[in-house]
Length: 214
Length: 244
Image 1: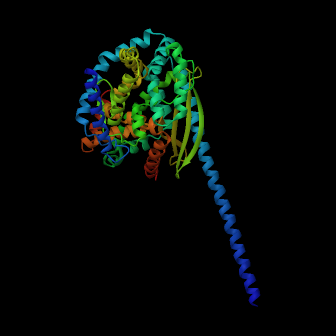
Image 2: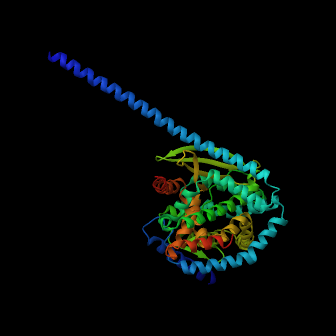
Image 3: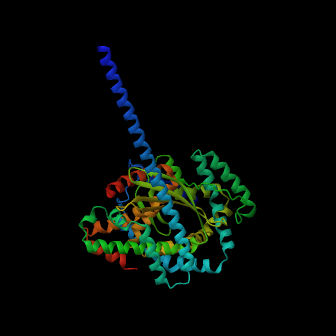
């Protein structure tokens, strides 16, 4: 009788173990799949954006500067998470800003990004982009590394690091770009927070400073 | 006599800056801490004025009038003039591979006085600032130096020591040539980043932007992957929090 009971218990344990292993495997495969899916998605977004930016540089070369800027704005809005950038570059001061101030800040930020891209757009058409290894960071972030090369070897190579994450709708958007180790979010944050700190968190003064030369 | 007093002066300044750097136990000073901000901002305005009135217009003309091939030659020559500093500092940092590569490059390109880069292989540029960093001297407060631009106290010490070393080791002719080439170097460097600097001037606070760019770039140059990994770990935690 005791033997039969032991046999039944050991059978139950082995069953339980088998189920646990199966569940563990299924979960692991899914996690791995979602990891590699996220990496693929991140890489695809960056590739797509580079292609669009290159085409854009060629297509818009004859346009008026204002028209060109508007087209770049659309391109940035499609690929960059401006809402995140707004929050990341103002730190705790973001909570103190009104809805209108937040929108105005995002618009000013967009203008700054456009200015930076316009600066390099003409040279981008003649350079080549090479995708390097990507990696999953933490629970949500994906890093995509790339290299900008001059096919003629006249200009030095530039290392890029794109930081991406999925938004609420699940589509991957760019959160930050590091050019040769210089993070755009970090430098924008240093600037914005310094002005906000000196002016007791007054967003209007920050906006005034951002818009005065644009 | 003049040489002796110059030597003493340089060593005194060096000692002050090294001690200043050593006084902080942290490797990196916080970007928010800027004890000399008021003076730095005044110097920044002075540098900006000089840049906008003299250096930038000359650089723009230089880019417009001089063909790219000649400009590349001038840039290569200026790099070649700085290679001895890389050789000395690579040796001091026990980076034998870079010491050998830089020495070979210096000798080979010496055939053309550096005007044509016969060896396209890249060497890592090293200066005394990076040697001090390898010796665990902390970077110290941020400084805006007249004409030289952004530096940390450690890097300013490094620059002074580099000049002192070159003056001691090189011949008078080489020394005079490198002095005469300072303005050319300024124009050449500015010409390469014309639009970038002009865009920085348009930002909300150009002083802070230049400081942030300089510190991130310099730390990346000296510490490479270690610095980037550390910085990105901190940023990741911040980003994940914001994404929740």
